[in-house]
Image 1 (tube, rainbow, N blue to C red):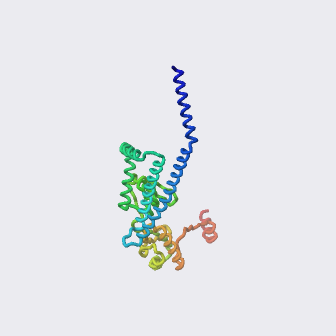
Image 2 (spheres, one colour):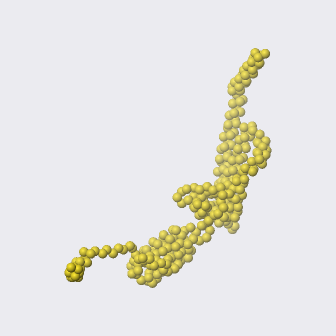
Image 3 (cartoon, one colour):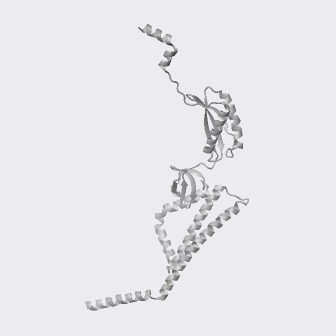
Length: 312
């Protein structure tokens, strides 16, 4: 009885091997495999072309809108452009994946139905993902910050590179790229919404005439807006800020366009230095007075000799 079962099993295995060999040498099998491969390659090429064309079309639409009466701010347009490109990428990739699965004779409808059922089961575990997407939507809808803005989120500070439906990317000025899930963004400081203030302290020597120095700097400050477009108004000379050990500190403040206060502070310092030099007004530098006992003996030999005699 056992011998009969073994013979049947061997016959079945041999039949399967013959079927496999027949399939490998079957021309129709290789034709269908080659056709499927070509279809998949064609789908990938079409996906790439569709992405290029779609992104180009989105950019062209925004260029046309820039000439229309109804306009968005530049920072708002940059944010919406990035967002639409991301959404387009997700949609095209999804359609491409479904098409490839259909080419491989996989039941896409059943897969989508099963995915819906699985999605309900996994939904409770995907709460963070849903929160990230909803938060990302409100960040864009409320215009809390946009691409190109200089912001501080938590301990990270830098320029917004991208705002997606799930994450936000911030690049610091030293090159680090910080990626935040939108749901974790609870507090944002945006430095690019309102004008910035540059604060410059200028030191003048005590020997100089402070009123004359202030008049010279005031005349200079009134001429700076014609030279620097980043200045919103002429810089304001507030007056004496502090009295230092060897200098009088005069403070200047200037309103600039957003995030240009660092640059303008450097330019104002340069202009003030050149102006004071041209008028012969000295900016103080550290000084040290040396006292030598030997020099004193040479200058006052009689007094020193008399002091020695008295001590004896």
